[in-house]
Image (cartoon, rainbow, N blue to C red; front, side, top):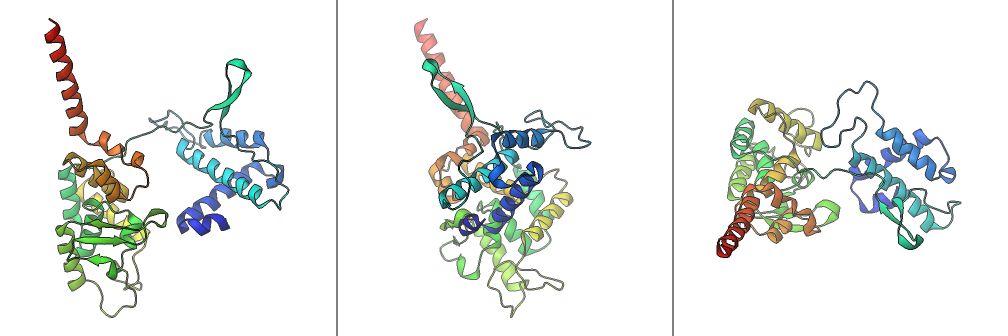
Length: 315
């Protein structure tokens, strides 16, 4: 956990600790005694239906934990053993988590070709412009609207919104400095003038004066007045506005996905979206090609017209 804490956010550390707790609670062995059979038994236990579960997930047809959750837990376990091996001062001599299932190729060569867990690649949900307007109208304060617009118009993550400080605001440039991006990476991103107008209304009329924190978004009422807003607090704000707007499902990350989908539909280059999103790899950004309806339709139409033209020329 020391290694994880040195390079990850607190929530990641907590998730890793919980994953290890679940694993060793089920296996019931000392880490040195764990073998590959124990890991495979753990996977089977995680995939088993939860007690009383009657609902089958559409994405993978199973009733146990989602494949992504199991893969994350296996990665945590594997990471622990890799750390112990690197240290070299423990009795651990091998990592019990296999890289994948073995396949025997021609010539008797054995390779790892099949992943232990297949996690379906699903597209994130986005909301349409009408739902976005209803959601924004259902927010009760300028503070709440500014946070929502930072995600919906700027594509900020929840943690990035909550991590904004007064010194990070660059209204003259219409930019934001993201000091606490995912993985500790920083970036400067452009932001809509609409967000800056809403932010100014919040800072001038709602944000308590004389408070110690330089966090932009703080609690407005109650015993925690003036303290930085928490992730749970922001989730509650989004959930309440969602219900008032009559939207079935909406999360902070969905607002971020909606932002980049709309930007792509408006013609923004994929590389520019990558920079705005703070993605380390362009592969993480390619999903917005599939979410943007006009891109796929346009690509298909151009290819189809080319094929039709060749067919007619052949006649």
